[in-house]
Length: 199
Ligand code: MN3
Image 1 (cartoon, rainbow, N blue to C red):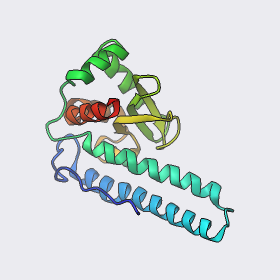
Image 2: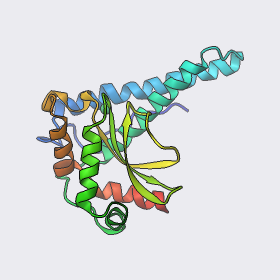
Image 3: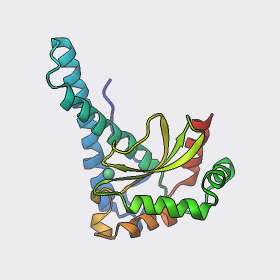
């Protein structure tokens, strides 16, 4: 079954002024949709390769599958990680786990911002639940799929590809990261993802 582009959980202009309508439109309708189409195309070509018993292109197609599939996954999380009038602090079990694993919310936020802002080229700042190690971790993924750990569940994904912020923030990636955490983040969604992941 092909994957499809999920609708935004809010209007295109709902995140103004911290995330501008034009960027949200381009980012969701063009960029995210490109990963959906890329993933479906890779899957279709792999199905044809299996049918033909010809795996000459499998190295390329495996890369396409990982790149576009991870891009679709991370963008889907990214949109729901934001809400109008977001920001504030996490609560409940998520706040307690952050304190346990990072020392304090301030220390966690410092690490998350630094990791996100220092991604080389295009990529993501991530908060993940590592079920094998029983802890939260901050990761910095290059592109969508590099430097990830396996068997983790992404709870929070901050997109720092230039397409995510350049129209409004130009080269000031750190200003976008700060605005994301101060005004856009939906901690309720992150906490729900944490609850589901930890079980
Ligand atoms: Mn993006």
